[in-house]
Image (cartoon, rainbow, N blue to C red; front, top):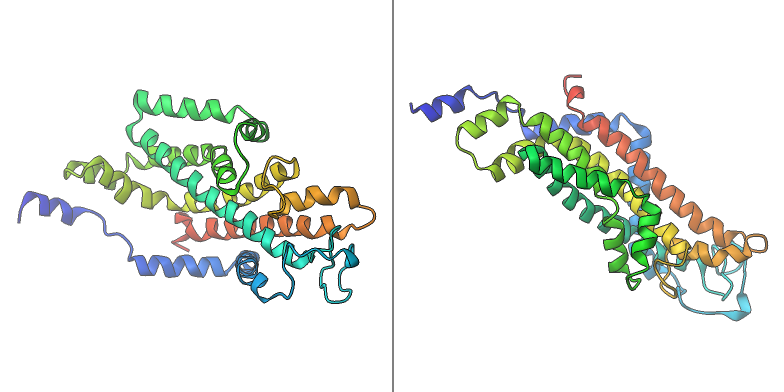
Length: 298
């Protein structure tokens, strides 16, 4: 037997992936609020994707004769807005935009934050210090002011809003990943992989990153909630998605003049935002406990 084979034989065996996944699923199922949050979020996504195809009304169809119809009156289940447009159709179409922005901005911010955190935590030294001081410098700016400042220089559309929100949400991810990778860098399995001649990329992507997946997944769910809220308030302030394309944020902006005469115009998109954010938070809590390594022994 070669020296390399002997070293490999002495490495601790990893738990079987299927058994680890089954244990994580069992722990997740112990959280009824997390199951409820995940189920409701999935239901919202499916309703926003397929719901508009099943409705008899288009979200842009104007019916002046039925302006401000209250919910559950006539053919309009959730009523109509100031132009007679069906609120249910607009709410679902707006959900497509707001949820798409939330998930896409989360994905972009996670990719960039993970790359920065991996490099800073793995290499450390001057390179790591420079990267993390840059992260700290960006974190000094309040995200709402940074969003508004950046939005003044771009043409508002869905793609630019996704980039804008992702550019203000990656810093927390980078800090979480950097702390995890720095702690894992000195563990026996990472040292053994380096001694066996593994490349830096292999050690980072195959050894360290999978062991830091728990806080990354939890951060991803919270980033979805952050992105939905960010899209909502910049659209509410007029810098986000522009009409006639609906989003939950610009629906709130259009409804502020009718809070007393037609409160459902604000309550419906506001309730959708609150429900989506709460579901993401509940889901994140369940995933945090399910993926916690300290819970595997229980």
